[in-house]
Length: 190
Image (tube, rainbow, N blue to C red; front, side, top):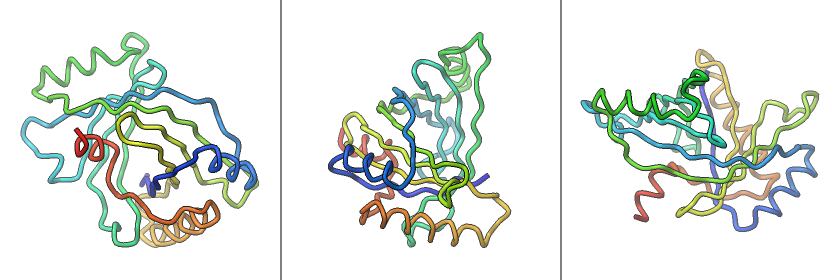
């Protein structure tokens, strides 16, 4: 699958949440995320535009690899292959996996901490394939992300996903997309 998303800086998350509810979305519980990004020992992920992280959501860990970004930034999108897997119950906090990565030469770059609330639309809604998150990111600010998942073999679907995201962004009053990752924003400000 390809993750197609656009993120927007927002001033008032409560206004955004109210707009989402008016459009038919329901918000889930607020989660605490701690994403520890790792540097590859032989490859510069900044140059290849990849990412590897151990994500802890309310203390429960998973690992995510994000492939190179596709060249769609000119239309205000980020699109890339994403592979995510949960860790075994014996490594619920992800420390064994992080220790394994470090033993293989990976180095922690930084941990991005955020409070995230995810909004989803009803299955029968024309917006049912969207996920919208409202994130309060430590050291970075408050953002909303609009995301669609599409089949990675669907080249025509990328443009359509971009149009759908832009329509929803307009309905939510979002104007200026932020193309940098939370990690980039955090490192820039440190």
